[in-house]
Length: 302
Image 1 (cartoon, rainbow, N blue to C red):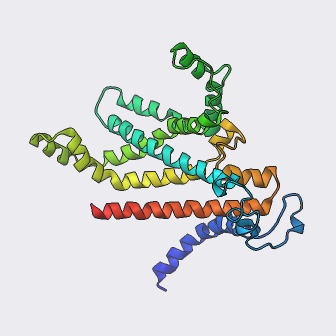
Image 2: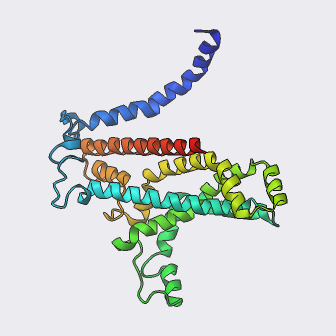
Image 3: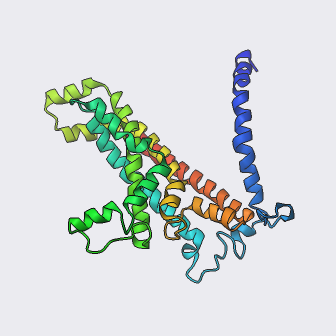
């Protein structure tokens, strides 16, 4: 090993040790607990149960003990809710964020103030924004119902965060409001790096702005856009705080992280909850790898 390599490893050593302590060790413990029947009230009595927490009679993916099948079990519902939330919210945030970024990239008076104002929803802590929207969406005294009734759009007040047909999509709407500025900021940073000569040439040639967007702007910012989507997808798949604050333990909106918390904290099933946590980790990793693979294929085609 050369002196440069030894120096590099020497500088990397503190970071690697820190990662080992704060990430690798807890992950290894969680995986180990997932193969036991550990209970949070008496961890000393934990026994090794193998794959029972995963594919056993009452396992996550074995027999969910539900007459309607796996997707009607609590874990199946949690997976479905999380995937629906992630796909819809990320798609909306990417589309809206792209639109906002394109607007903020234009020259107009007061642009700096508008850029700062757009970031306010993202700067508000998630718990604070969730409580704020919880009050606004309240079925009795919420301002949203009052405005909709005043406009004649609804005849009766709606429990936006309690009724199953509205609860999940209400959470999606609040998340889109909060996180669209994050996507807009990342996309705007990519737009700021684009060369101006391409646009000047297109303007001289009289190319339509929509054609310039599809043929010039979008291909140039696509790598940065893919990175932004990956970051947001990772965050959306592990959603917990927004759903928990807005809808508490509502089964119609329970995410995979919410399921893990319920089994570990509320029910005390540390082993079963660890199995769900490990499955969540693998699902997020698989989803990220698939998306990166697909995006890399699309980039190579261009």
